[in-house]
Image 1 (tube, helix red, strand yellow):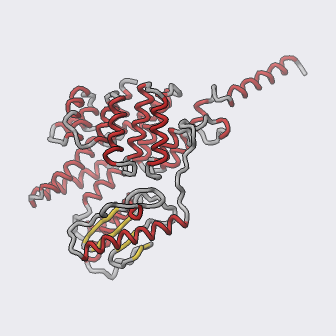
Image 2 (cartoon, rainbow, N blue to C red):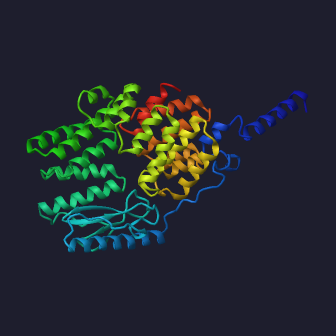
Image 3 (tube, rainbow, N blue to C red):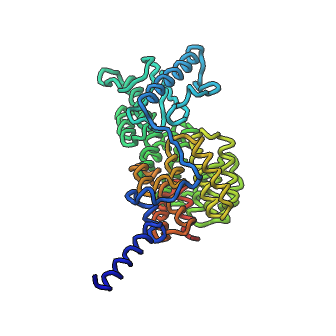
Length: 419
């Protein structure tokens, strides 16, 4: 064999060893699922998570618990209760797959729904009209106008809780065809979630005008808040500040415009929203304070609250970006993996623990805009914190920054100016 060919083969062997050692190809190991699992870094916490998986047994248990929860509320209704809520919520009021409390919606009759679509088979819905778990909706063709309105109401909220915003929008429009506006708030929310901020703002404008005419102040304020969120999504923060927004919205608009000193002062007035405060502190690069605020979210809302996972994400990223001791971040993430609800954003916690690569995380996010924003935000900042693949990190943060009404979009836009 010619010497030059032997040298080339030896060099190629060294390159392959170098690549698969995870040094040269470290970004590849984190980004692509085809990279051999055995060459990926071990779990950051030292131990792998064991997320609950949906099974036929869990699905059946959820149906039974949802029915038991519905019967609890039905007894309250028979006893004359004006508001329906679980008293001293227990494990029977939570989905066994996700750990989240069931949601209720009422319009004379009521529904108990399993949220966040943790099941692969169907959405679990208990209907007080039939007194049983429903797996499909009866036809509305034989119903009168009031019956159709109630059916559209329940169907739209079920679609929303199952993550199908397109279906929710369709049902909201069917309600509007009856000249009813009871679903307009959900319509604007769903359109905004789909990225149709201009359409959502048109709904808000119409509803605000009607609310002013009817002197319905609470309705007017609710749609004004939604309208400001639409303006933030459209990048019109100046227009928001020209009005009289709430403290949270005002702070978001100031951060979007780079008015950090003013945003810091506004933040001092916000006492009742620790999760937003955590993201605002993160945006201002006050990372140690952000970490403490994330812990406050979990202390006040509990580890089984809707946004427990988000609090863990922003807390861990704060530790990484501030250079805090690794043990604190590891312990915080380990507790989140053990106790946070096993639904979104749980896959992000698994990514932070190096159990999922970037490609697998984006697959878990799917086409949902809010999940995609959270994924771009988390992956981008993880890469920046670990000083890897900086160009790709900034690309991901730029994508997140394009969605101004999300806390992650707000923070991404601020941090891109300083990193």
